[in-house]
Length: 108
Image 1 (tube, rainbow, N blue to C red):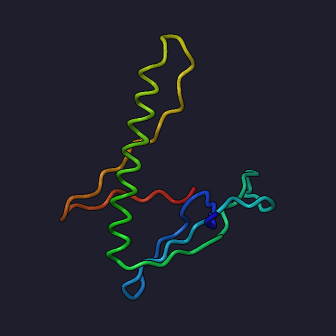
Image 2 (tube, one colour):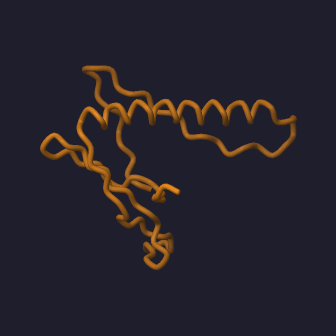
């Protein structure tokens, strides 16, 4: 079996010297924030070329659209009065050249 790595999300993306560094995070089992919520902690880094990152970004966009479509279909197929499915977050569209990119939401 191939090795699998679990992450709760991406904590930081850094571009240095033509390489993109993606820092993955998991929620700590022991560290808590002032509200008592688990704190995201670094767990793994992936480093890739700018070209590789841009290709990956397109794949993430495709996956986000597929998930959004599946959630919408599931919602539409529910009988009236049934408990509603969790709402999917809107899929952000990439900015067109010359447009400002949408504001980034910090993790989590």
